[in-house]
Amino acid sequence: MRSGTAIREYEERLLAYEASVARPLPARAAPPHQRPPARPRPRARRQASALRRRVRRIIALTVVLLLADTFLSFASAMLRPSNVGLGVRVVEWLRDNGAAGLVSNVEAVYYSLNTPATGGAALRALPRVGVGGGLDGARSYAPPPIPPAIEPALPGEGAWHGTGPLVGGAPPVLVTTLRPDPNYPQLVAGVAWIDTSRSSLALYPGRYEPPNGGAQAAEVPPSLRGRVLATFNAGFKLEDSGGGFVVGSTEYAPLRDGQATLIAYRDGKVDIRLWTGGPVPGPDVAFARQNLPLILSGGRLVSNLTDGPEWGATLGNAVRVWRSAVGVDARGNLLYAAADLQTATSIAQILQRAGAVRAMELDINSEWVTFNFYGGWDATGPQKLLPGMTRDATRYLTPDDRDFFAVYARR
Image 1: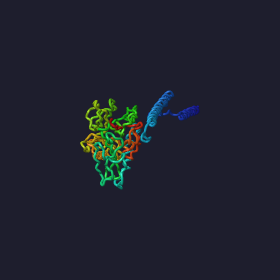
Image 2: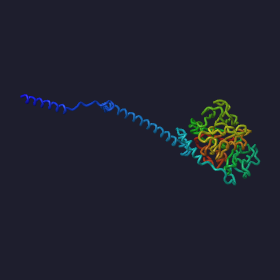
Image 3: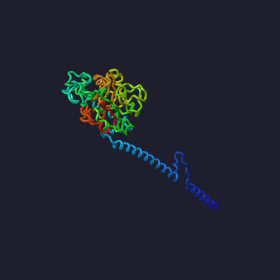
Image 4: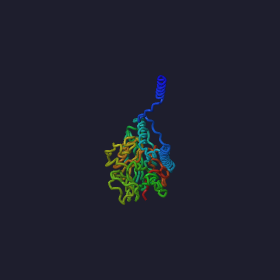
C-alpha cells in the first residue's frame, strides 16, 4: 500500500516538474535605446505629409515667379526699340540685373588675351578726313596744326580740314587725323575742333539713358537739322559714372562736386571744369553733363590718371580700348578726340597735344564712340571722323539709346 502511494506521489512530482520546464519564460524588456520607434498615428502622418507638400508648393511657386520676372525683364529689354545690336543689349541687361561682376570678369579675360602688340610696319598714308582741302584763305581763326608724335610726319598729318558748311566765311568745325603713339605706328586718332563763337552746343537725353529720359525724341530734331554741323557721343551711363545730368530746368541727376563737367551757358559759351557749385546749377546754365574726374587741368595731365577705379569698374584706366574725350582750349573752343587702343592717359595726351587746357573723358568702347559731321546743310553728306568707328554716320539722326551732343551753326 505504501509502495503504491509512493509511486503516485513520485509520478505527480514528475508531471509537475515537466509542466514547469515546458512553460515559456516571461520576455525581458528591451533597453530603452533598443526599443523600436513607435509608429505615428495615421492622423499625425497625414498632417506631416500635407505640410511637406505645402512647403514644396511654396518653393516651386517662388521659383516660377522669379523665373517669370527674369524672363519678362529680359524679353522686354530685347524687344523694346533700340539702335544697338542684340549682343550689346544682352550684355547691358546682364550688367543691370546682377551679373555686372560676371561680365567684368569675362571682359577682363577677353582683353588680357587680346592685348595689342606694339611695333609693326609704319603707315604710308592717313585716311582722308573732312571736306575739300586745307584752310588757306580762311576768314576766321583756326588753330595751329597738331605737332606730330611720330617723325617724319605723313602728308597732312595734324593739319586741319573743313567739314563743309561755312559760318562767317569759314567752317566752324575742323577735323584732322594723326598717329598719336610711336609704340603703335599703325594707330590713327581723330581730332575735331569746334569754334564756339560761331556754333552752339546742345545736349539731348537718349531713349534709355539717362534712365528717366525714355520719353525723349533722342535724335537731332528735324526742325533743327537745317543748322546741324556735327554730333558726338556723351559720357558713361549715370549709374556707372555717378555724375549729374541737367538740361534746362530738368534735373535727370543732381550735379556732384568734384566731377568733370561740360557746361553750356545760355549766352552760348561752353566750358569744361571741375564742378564745385552744388547739386543744382544756376539759371545761366543751359545744360551740364558730368563724367568722372578731369583728365587735363591747366594743360597738364592730372595725377590720378593711374587710379584704375576712377575710370570704370570694368576697364579702369589702363586697358586699351576705343575711348573718346572732350577738351577746351585757351580761347574757349572745344576739342574732341577719339581713337582705338587708348588708355585714359593716352587719350588725355592726344588732347594735350592738340592744345586743350582742360579735358574730361567721354564714353568708351567701339559701340559708343561716335563723331559725325555733315558735308552740307540739312544734315546732308554725313561722314565719320574715323572710318574705324563702328556706328553709322547717320547715328543721332534717328532715335538713339544714349544721350549725345549736337553742334549747330549760330544764327
